[in-house]
Image (cartoon, rainbow, N blue to C red; front, side, top):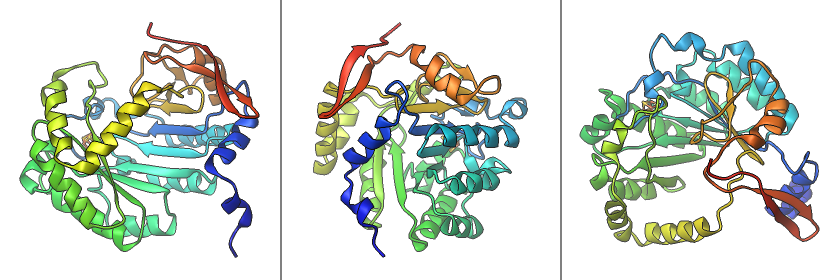
Length: 323
Ligand code: SF4
């Protein structure tokens, strides 16, 4: 039977009702959790790969720690949870973690390189469907794809994963970061994704420094001009870019209000792009970290306090800016 209540509540109304229950205008609704830096590939632009070495693995959160924190996120009201890596399927306990998260009712997005998605894994996901699976498709040619991943055979494995997930009608997003080595592939990837039908496409323009701070990765960054040249060849990409630019003018970062990030070692941070400061979830509770520490973490984007009013949310004061 159709649920009349759900179909009659708009996204905005739903969000308003949730935030009305929040503490101090904050609610940890949306989390991203980097479960591991381990990965079977070594993409040239990867920021976690610097910690993809055995000496760092024992430092990552252990199963019982992950499960304890998951319970705290659930209790805290987190609804949308993205599990990422590294490569999530490199964790031996991934299915256990995922199952617990599913049973708690999180809407889970999985970021994966796709190369470890076998028939068995896709059957498991069919039985326990995530909200979405996002896979990086770096190129439509094996040669360029594997130039990016540095993993022989990875192209075929990722194509297999895409087919397996589509056969099981799972919601799939294919994404690509524009790099000097795949710049001529971007529009081909977009066309390939369009041809698949009901699959979303995301184009990432920026790469970021590696987690140890090294910046060698920027040798692969496309210039603003090169990015525009790609987008101008595709009217839809151009339209999307224009919308993004318009939105950027009024952008308010909600990290620390509704969003948060956790790294592989249990540090709670504002977002994956800002790890200047972290709160150690091994030593304290998620509630303490989110409400008492995150609001004071430095951020280069201005943030606004949100206050609920009958006509919506209005900003009341800026609480942090570039340190
Ligand atoms: S697949 Fe992802 S985590 Fe693995 S090396 Fe590539 S970018 Fe890094």
